[in-house]
Length: 274
Image 1: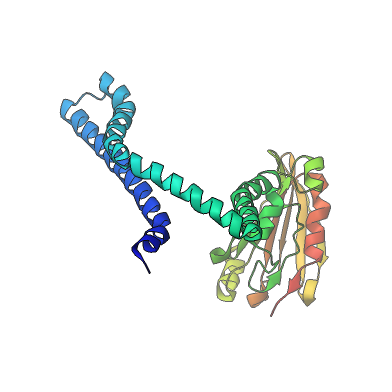
Image 2: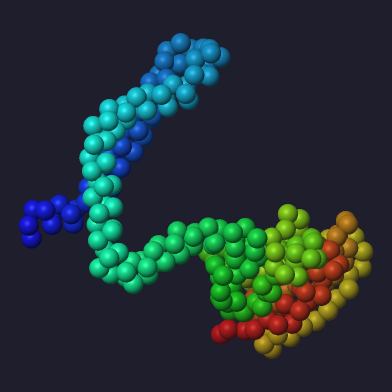
């Protein structure tokens, strides 16, 4: 490999190194300026002094002043770099037009992809949370069929998952992001030994009115649900018997009446994974 070809091959590496050097100088000078200003304030003992208002612009000015000589020194090299890059690009377009076209298309897609993903998460947050957890196997021994128009948050280390329902029926039906929430559905399981101990010491939430009780048997495991009013919302407390062992499950619904049917549909659709 000749010296010229080697220099051409290392052009991107050299350009990246120059950019990193400029950024590093800026960051170092900026942080150093903040440290110097902090030491000065500590020396003055008066944090109400007007110098505090000059801390940020002062640090930025010092950082720019340090980077400016470096940029001036590399300016001619950058001009030559851009000119050489233009000539190389022109020659490549002439020799390999199809390859250049596909490269431009791939570059455009890669540049736009983060923005597309961000926009998707921004407008379709409930669906995006499901894409982060594509499987419904949220708990060790249970598959929980949470609809994709409900926003989910999962903590695998605690065997805990929460589904949140939008307060706007128009956004909820299409899985759109909403600023208001109408209901929360909690699902949780614990190790078998811990479940038995909890059942001995646990009492269900105190009731303001006689609850309605319903029973379900998904996967042959019996689950009892107590439903009653809780202030202005509805509360449904579901759990497996004390002898459920490793198949234990507790579920709690708090929210509006319009989401109760969805919660019961999830309970009916539970599947056991042994």
